[in-house]
Length: 255
Image (cartoon, rainbow, N blue to C red; front, side, top):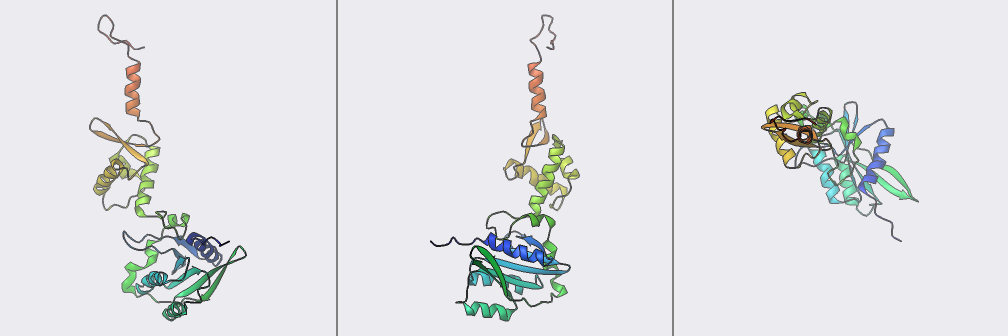
């Protein structure tokens, strides 16, 4: 029976465990910017960074991905990690070695995933003029809770941070105004409070931000977590239930 193909997340887990044992901090799926590639793993030790791309096989696609980081002076070290033998592609292996790219191979030995480093990456000095491109500028502690090698949207972004901060504030202060939430939440990534106000309102109504909803009290806008009942609607409904029909003299009677 043919063995099921190993997933990139499993290769990422093996690499992550090894890096942690060697004293490296691991940041999976680092978001650089919209439309830009994400490295599967960025490892950090003091001022050094190490980008590692994980794939289920050795291919030109893997070569393209790692050389993108290597040639753009983003990190001091760059490596690939792939599953299987890959000995039949000596051209790719030799080219990566000449470029200074490190090579990890993950092999399934009787159900145990074995990791071997066939070529250590060469140290690459990053010129100061490329400081704005350094991958270390994009690392965030929140990235550590994600898995390397995910093909879905499971990765950290500044937008997700902003939504999380907004949700926490609204949950603690249900019924707050949008202005109060923006001014008092921990932080947001938008360039100004005015931009944040416009984007948040649009994203909530467009169902992009799903954890917060808008309720209106006349012209006023109030924010509630999706699980929180609208206190203004509740007050109105309770008041209607507790007001009896008009008394003969025209006065309202409270039940």
